Image 1 (spheres, helix red, strand yellow):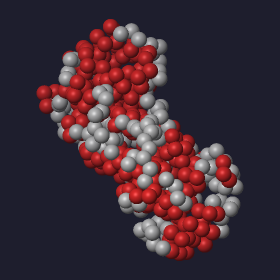
Image 2: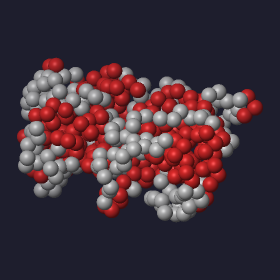
Image 3: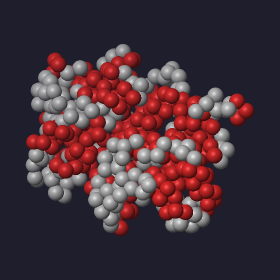
Image 4: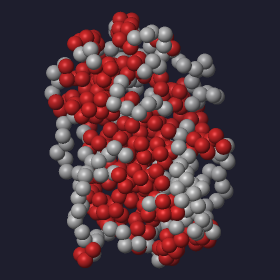
Length: 462
């Protein structure tokens, strides 16, 4: 049985023997999925794709030059890829405490430089003590995600200390030099180096050379705050390898990252793949606390039920389940004030929302074996009359997976609480609403199947 078939089995139960087919194409590794997760975090922070990858390459290269064991180097690289994963869980808690006119993305883009006192607070109005109390927990909130994606506790421990400074002024523990694990020291420094290279600081924005900016930073800002051995090794790295700074600013950063990570020998079974994808999908679910939790799982249940009713092969049912869980990952780029708005969206806000299918595709499209998944994620808001988004595809220009996801998504939306309306529809009341859009919005055959599936109680109704 293929891995995607194993995923489908978790939703639809064992396959009947006469329908079993064995096929296995490309499969992602844990490395592929962590790179994609890192890119999703770049969306959350409003930073260019591969920002997290740069931090990982800087941290891993320092660790390698310090002759740390390969396992420790790998742990530092994985921690760097996921170092701000805890921010996702805090967005909805932080949002009410943001000063007027300040977005969470402005904060996220600069927080590592503010913590290292390279720049002051980027906002005139100070944050409340309650805000800082919440925000300073983000290094700790990553542990649950790390455990769900089958990474070791030492990676969570490195992430937990990536904002500690050697002079004891960091957070969340206020550790001093001898108390901070080496991985935490390396990641704290690499995180700030990447921020300097991106020119986040107004203090450094006039410097013409990235190398000059780094030298200025290391001469003035690192003493006392960062481990001197880590700083010394990094100076040697950029001195001995003149191309290093150029390469990490290019697409070559992905190849550099692969060289730092071992080939994973862990079997990527269906249950393992499903648990990692579910954790990734949970990132977008967690951004929308005003919606019911478990949204992506519910859409996956309905989508796989529709697909199986159509006679679609089990492996594609498994792919469809994962596409359903990942379809809103592009919402990590959507500002909190839009996601949490109680009321109709403006035209500009709708335009921002309509970017999320393509952003989700951008996160997923380079994962081996995820070609269908990335396509279906990009199409889950397309409509049969061409009035959907983002590509305005019509009719059967939309793949069957995209049409199934679109219908399952709408049914879930109608039957779930939404902040912009007073009540959710009962399942039987949602069917005629959807029926009004048969042929124009939704695939007519799928609308008929949906009615049969709902009436037969083949899926759990919320």
